[in-house]
Length: 196
Ligand SMILES: C[S@@+](CC[C@H](N)C(=O)[O-])C[C@H]1O[C@@H](n2cnc3c(N)ncnc32)[C@H](O)[C@@H]1O
Image (cartoon, rainbow, N blue to C red; front, side, top):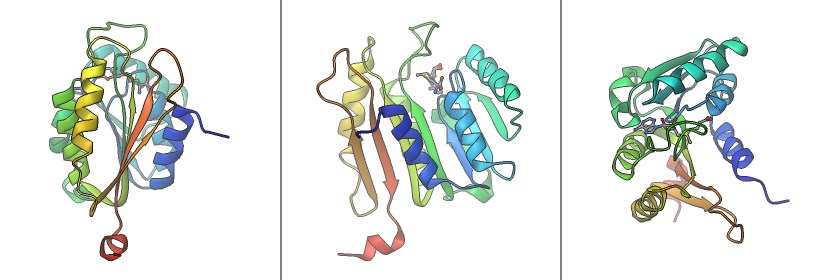
């Protein structure tokens, strides 16, 4: 009955986005999330997919070709630079973004997401979310540096103003080997903002 982490992460973001939206894959890696986002926003929509590793951009590009998906801009840059890539017309209208934190499976474990840049990217995207928009982070933290990023994120997101954002933590607390968990940030709708 309880949903597994990755399917639930996808369910959360898919509930917030619709065909024609502009959405962000902040850590495209091998492109698993990119494909799902691309299929969900459809040919009228657009995905901005970031990664700092060329091999991730290439892997995602191959994955997209397999599915004949052409609505993705692959960006070889850190997600902390996201502001400069959001087109003017989409500012403050983003429907969703997904982060998979940690390192790229089967590659250099030294290249990991880092607390300062992850938080910078989340804050920038949060500022550009539309009402009802969502940021979904799948937090892997079993690797060196992971615990530090997890703690920094929890500390930071706890301070988000509840009048404007709802922040969810979802994970299994009795599993071995530091299983990933979800942190999801939803921008509250205008209506719920005025609801006491
Ligand atoms: C856990 S993997 C992502 C897995 C991916 N979502 C997938 O479906 O395969 C994390 C990725 O974040 C990337 N990364 C690390 N720091 C980054 C940054 N500042 N901006 C964008 N990507 C970054 C790594 O290169 C790695 O590919």
